[in-house]
Image 1 (cartoon, helix red, strand yellow):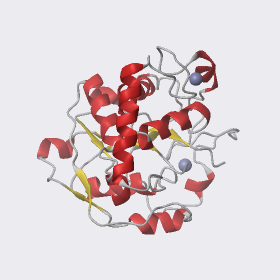
Image 2 (image 1 turned 180 degrees about the vertical axis):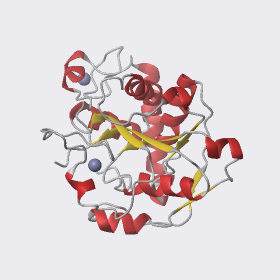
Image 3 (image 1 turned 90 degrees about the vertical axis):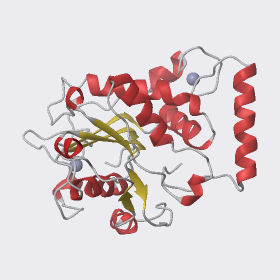
Image 4 (image 1 turned 60 degrees about the vertical axis):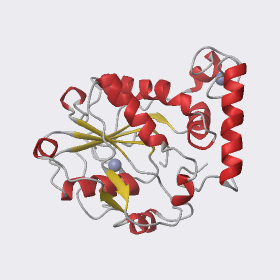
Length: 266
Ligand SMILES: [Zn+2]
Ligand SMILES: [Zn+2]
């Protein structure tokens, strides 16, 4: 699955029926593993839990990409070194909790496309864990204790709107409750954008340029306090960069970004 690809369902009615089926099954059967679907009381069964890959240092100082091998003294990944985005990143630090692979990939898919909104709370708990375990990072960290606002990335396309929920908003809201930080859906889509799937990183950046706007202006306190942007999956970062840019252009001093998962490109 590509996180920017359109929802695979053909009609809203089909989506509604599928969601109803999920809810019915949840009501009848005990909770299932978010990875393989076996019955378990935990988010992941023992087998799937053992396959999860938390993103561990060393990380790129700019985009948070994990390095498999880090040459001594190298702090910036090849993409950031190549200045792919041709400008300084609009966020102060970006972190992702897990590699987008195996059981985490399946869980993110169930959460985003299959109506498993009940996964929001346990997945947000993994985000919280990521934020609270940054001590070992030899890279800029997200100062979670100083956050004053948590903002989700808006829905990625009008087709996804039919799902009836924004998975990033569900995650962000749960995380905000866990951390006791205000939550606000400050960002919205300003225009329709074609799906990002199949586009190069440069084309993705072009595709989302100007695609976001604010729902409400930032107040003075929000401008001067650290804001955390939350999304489910980071692909090339084009969307989250554009969202952070909108917040910065509207006065936000410091924006951090956190995603549940990101794929390995290098
Ligand atoms: Zn499992
Ligand atoms: Zn980087």
